[in-house]
Length: 390
Image: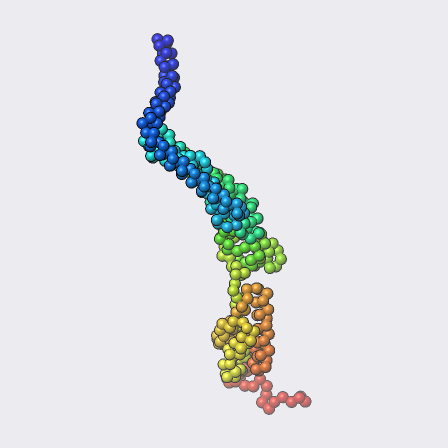
């Protein structure tokens, strides 16, 4: 009984080998019969496939020539050329074999093998093209961007290249396995869990990296820009992978994480076409109505005399100690220093012109009246006046 069990086990172990040998012998026999019966169709398929391979070789050569004209990727055509040059020979051969299968009825097993090889070649070739395009766009930005952008992207390019390569080829591998009939549900779930774990572990790093890339590509500000957020005013000195450094107007260096900075409302003062200023002006209540009525016109003449942009001026209210007017004007320059001087010039011109016109600026005043016990107003000193000899 034991001997019979051993013999049965040996037979079971030999079955896969015998099955594989029979399949290979059947494939060889079917292939020979296919060549004998469909020689003309096979010749046409081979000719078409060879022609397509030759065209794709020319396609790749053309891409190489485009890329070699400007290897720095300073223009988009060089990115397209480098992507074309990434066309692999094994993909060309896979396309040629597919054409052979189309023009001739290959045996089932051979056709299955050809379809499998073509699917793998096509998916991974698309992955290579996609990787070349994505990295080309990023590298193009390092060439055409400002020096600060180039430095930041140069520091991140290795990490970006690894992330893009892993992501693209992982998707390609999953697609191939799915098309071959494998159940990838568990694999996708496992990769998802692993990705979540890695993402949580490196959450801060990726958050700051993507924030830095957002600043570089979206350009809310760049190195040298004058920005304002919260209570900080200053100019951008460095945009790094994790932090942005801002030199405050008071001299100290402010360091803030990129993600935290992007969450704030940022005012970019460098991109102003003009700078607007506003003056509040109060004159005394003793000002004659005719003179007060001329104040808006006087203010307009002063502003236009400096070639600034007059916006509006006019009466705004009765104050406790003054008749209040307001002036708004634009200094037609983005530089803060120019605007600062323009505000000074206009202010001093108003002070001088009001002196010439006899218009007095108001300041807080208080008048005291004296009343008798019965409530009637009386002079604060005895009637008849004050004698200097007393």
